Amino acid sequence: MFGQDIGIDLGTATVIAYVKGKGIVLREPSVVAVNNVTGEVLAVGHEARRMLGRTPGNIIATRPLRDGVISDYTVTEKMLKYFIGKIGGRFLFAPRIMICIPSQVTEVEKKAVIDAASNAGARRVYLIEEPIAAAIGAGLDISKPSGNMIVDIGGGTTDIAVISLGGSVVSTSIKIAGDKFDEAIVRYIKKKHNVMIGERTAEELKLNIGCVYPKFQDMEMDVRGRDLLTGLPRTITVYSSEMLEALEEPSMLIVDAVHNVLEKTPPELASDISDKGIYMTGGGCLIDGLDKLIQEKTGINVMIAEDSISCVAIGTGKALDNLDNLDRSRRG
Image (cartoon, rainbow, N blue to C red; front, side, top):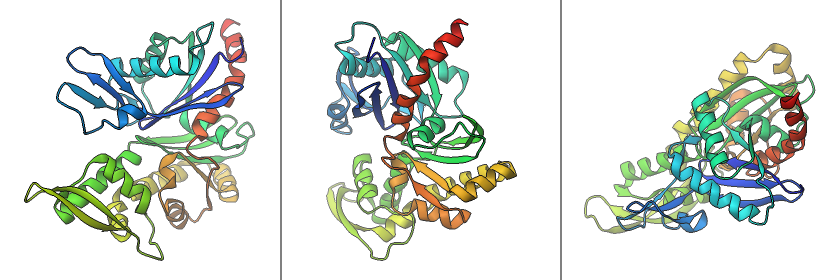
């Protein structure tokens, strides 16, 4: 049945869905607003994200995934059910779904993803590692005996892998990514300006003036937060040079992780990587200067993949083409 296969990038910050034959059909924040008295889901996605930090006591706007894995199973299931219904409300049959997961998840975490998708209405669930999906989505040919290095920076995790012959040779997954950048900004503004800002404001600072490599021209942005001395709202001006300082620690942890993977890479594959370069994918890789920083510290050319935010979902979608072979091998 055409259109029954869905690829889902179940991200900590964003859920992106790809339907076979149609491309990307859904891109929404992975946020759910729940009435904590009745357990009823009030809003999902964009609508729920607008409620973050702005809800009365009986409503909680939460992100059911933390650091790339399910932290609230029930809410994740409800969120998936909502998104699957939104994508395929007209499906005659339950869809087959491929979901990508960080490269270092445990068997328990894998089972949680499979169970949540099955209970949300999937006929069959497959899992694919994020770096492999990202490499396929970035247009790399990973089937050959040649090394490809992918650094996929999402909201909750950064997955780094060297891929050859369709599988990960060396990989690591660290819980330092977009969310940790936001948290670092919140801490820095609190310490330096004595002002408390919310996660959304921190994210706006990161997107607009955030950088991890010195800029030619210092940029500025006005933000409003709560003065910790008076308890009243206060507007402050923040500069990109301050962002550089705030984001130094998390960005260096990512550089160190890339270094560690390179150190463990077999020499032949390492020489392939120094020829081809390192490919970066995921929304987190778009922070200004991260490619330059990794290039400077490793001495290897760094490229940001085209449509880097959607790479994992596109790769998951392309991998759907092999589902029939997977089914046959299971039956065989």
